[in-house]
Length: 100
Length: 168
Length: 113
Image (cartoon, rainbow over all chains, first blue to last red; front, top):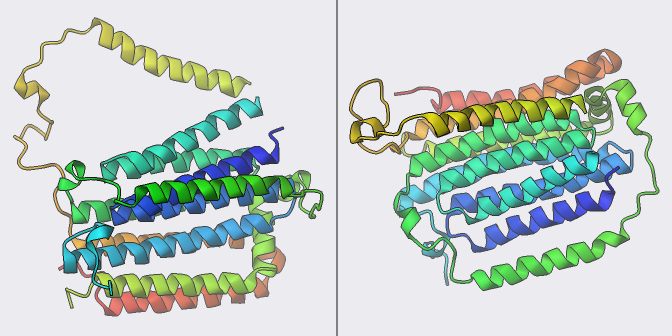
């Protein structure tokens, strides 16, 4: 039997990798992919907790997270397309229109 | 045996997520992500969550990643491979994510699992996973379910509005 | 255990066949052989051409309705237990998404030209 902590370690590591990607990549699309990585890190922790605590609520939560991830990807990528039309760039450090 | 499977799947997930973040070509990133999602689905299977594993493959690997690939093809940024891939503030990003990782790992020992719910492994197996999930989802979680439909409505309206602006 | 054995044999057979071929076949490359195959026609331009934004709109609608379909699996399985209650729930869910569908229709998201 795999102990619960292994899953929680894995979830934390995947979350941290996603966070690193989100904070450092220049390409907006890869940043959105990194958000999906972070959500997956949370998902694996939730499913593991739900399995070891014998309660299905964690898995229901994962289900809703998947729905929100789908909506977030659709809207986020639409924003990337709109941005690319206006600025012809997909790099975050070239988008300075709201700098004071 | 199960530990061996877990070791393989977990190692693959970590290596593949690093590859997603570190590859220069955005298309390669998406394809590594696809492999990573499939291994994640394997981990869900190890945790007896077969419906979630199927959902992971159908929604994440089958739909969301196709959307990402389409947008990368749409923008078609070919000079990407020669440019710097990280922002100038990357040491800050490394330290922040490392700090969060250490904080999370330090907090892990505080988890208690002695409070057991009604859905033991045998109970889930008796009713089958999809049925058990449906029972909880459509009775206890009715309101979040309807709110999920509103979230999807917002996704349709927002994405169509933003993407079709030029054509109208 | 038999599953693991089966997986190992399958992987070994596939890799083995590829590696044996690599060991024994002749290598005489020339430019035409190394060209990507496009049904006998000379390839023109880059493989990564710019896609139209219409593909994105269609893919986005696919994602949303894919998620809706995934919600229907557990609903269909427990429908006989919960009955009318679940039916009304699903009707509201589908109605809300139908509004989005009609919006996309009115904005001509489905029209190609």
